[in-house]
Length: 336
Image (cartoon, rainbow, N blue to C red; front, side, top):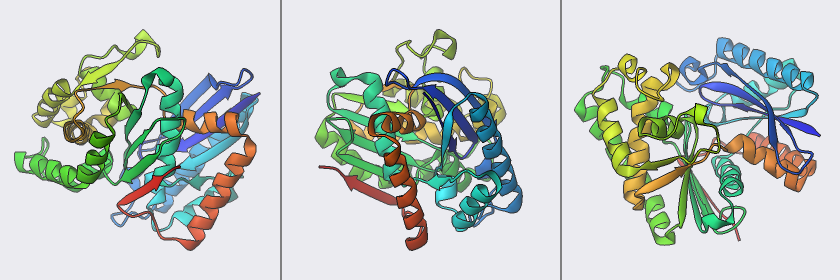
């Protein structure tokens, strides 16, 4: 059986088609559409007509591609850029009306749980007590647990794109004071979460997301052509050096560095500051880079828990959209 999942993030809409015949989501086909959605939203976070039109087109293309590959679904979700949009209900209803796809938004803690599951399945039980860090465009997810799902999961509004728009607006490269102001905010927002991770003392810490993957490549990790099974690690001291290097360069110059792509060059510095600050506060000298993240987490939960699980996610998301305001700066879930 083939299933598919669509992830609408700050920069891209991604489709993953997987074969689940053996109980593991083996990749069959992946494709992405570069929307740069976070750059197209209005100053108040509202997703305007042009951005919404592009999102609808991408979801429709993902739907058609999934059907071409004989995949069920797709299961479709949007992350922080839509989750925090004041008009998110209109966005989701328009996507459904135009494409027939019931896209939902996931809470930050649900994103952390699903990404943690993907990291756990990738690293295996030998990883022991596991911590997870995931930097997206709009948020940073942190989780910790001993088992399949985390016992502790948080979501903070410390996404690389969000912070770039907030702090690096005057010059390129930014001023020293702008970088210091960003680091102060990250330290303040991460203080309590970092204390929890230090107290838990994880045996293994895994990082996911394109931001971390590109930073790891800049720090000397093997390139993508080495394959997904090549071990990849990132040391805190190397990330500190990388952050200093990125701070001294313009976005155009950063795009010439190993691993840094042009679309993510501008936000790479904010990602490096968040990553290094988190590792320092949490007492982490090195982290393992995991190629699986939230999309694989969705596929795994579907394989392991069945279609009813996703139906429950969509139902809960619909109820949340109707009854609650957007998630605040910090969301926490503790599982028993």
